[in-house]
Image (cartoon, rainbow, N blue to C red):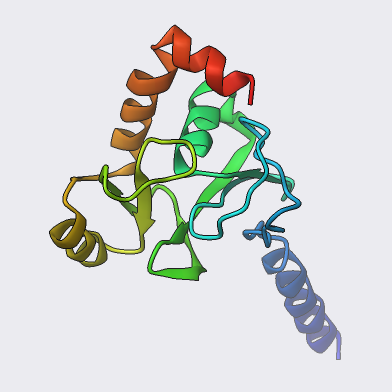
Length: 161
């Protein structure tokens, strides 16, 4: 019987620890505020989030705000970064695995024209229709850094929102 109780304890422990993995939180449109620019999050297809290791969600109104926060904050306590698939807004995609389209014909809330997709094929289909460049997350951060953070006029504008 001792072996059975050890197995039960082990099984319960596995369930408890596997249930503690931080997961994307629902975004309350019209209620949640962007952790970077402080604007209200109003569009599901653009709402993103960074989860810390304790499971707290830092929510953002756009890919560009999340990337700016990622660049400017100490990421030591970050667990994961999440973006909605632009074509399936209920589907959360790990930001570092997502594929992005930078197309000036697809506006985003903060004006850098970024949308996120679960896979390259989806991004390429949208690119065929709307034009633009396909990026990975590191390239998004380079774009945000160059367009916002290295431009003092834009940096002040975004910090005051």
